[in-house]
Length: 404
Image 1 (cartoon, rainbow, N blue to C red):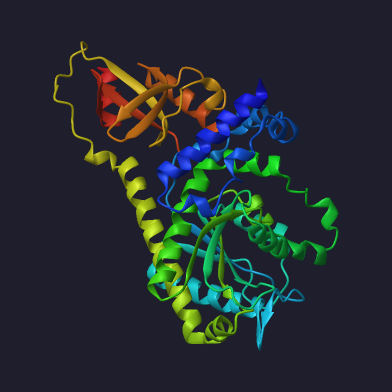
Image 2: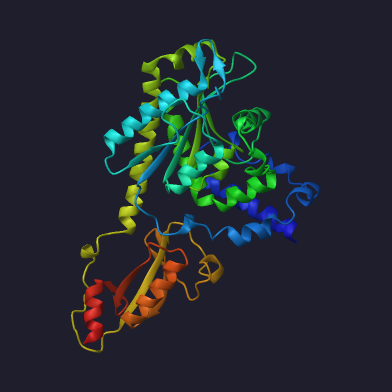
């Protein structure tokens, strides 16, 4: 039975990506769906569904959306790891130059955002530590910058990757090349598990909320590259270790092929590195703007809440307190296993958003206890709301009505 549920889940997830993101999904994601034969699923995916079911809705990706604060910029390679190379160029140098230029643009144009670099000089940083920096700093976005290579000199153009299964041999080779840095690390065998297809599928499903954002951001990056005359090779997926280990929207950008003479010459020039950084920054601005719009929609200033039409303060008014756990454009069944064990979660549609409430009570002191319970479950941004006769009012007004 698990085998068939796996297939259903994967197909639904695949369809959701096509619907929600205007990108060429044919250049990315899973291998051809006709590969999902009975024999293939039995061999590869038996048991994955149960694992995913336990963790899919338990990750923080469905917690309250927070304000955009931190972006981590990761310049690939460094130190004794040169990456790929061209005539008079090294990947580690080009990646660092573009990363630093991008960071300056973000810092200059977004005073509310902290830019964090995995490296700002020619030093070696392990893949594990790059991900740890992003996770520890609770980054809202992870941007990894690289340059590409091929055994042939003709391939050219830019491509942006998100986490997932490769579709082509070329995508597999690129991931293998970028992951090969593991061999240069000490004690690497104890830090890294082999990224198998089933682990990749479970991870991408677990981080689906982030993956959708990653694909959207990657698509914007490719559009901006196209505007400055770069060849668009599309948005793709592959099993990059650094993306596998991060827990936020994450992309890996291949800025061009150093094995192509024309692109190598282009990427070596500082003025063109600045153009590349500007293109990425333009995509970043749009990503952050969209994120801020959603945040502002969800967290309207409480003083902006329209007062209830009913102004009476008599004891006949029904005062109710609820905790808003989350708000999302995605509909999730209000079952306890979807909300970290919290029971009695209420789902309400509010415009294009689904809001999820918990702990309904007429006692303000009781709702405060429920709020503490919600926060211990991981809903750090949960907050109390007041309702009178079914209509939302300012919290202080609801407290006063309760005491009358």
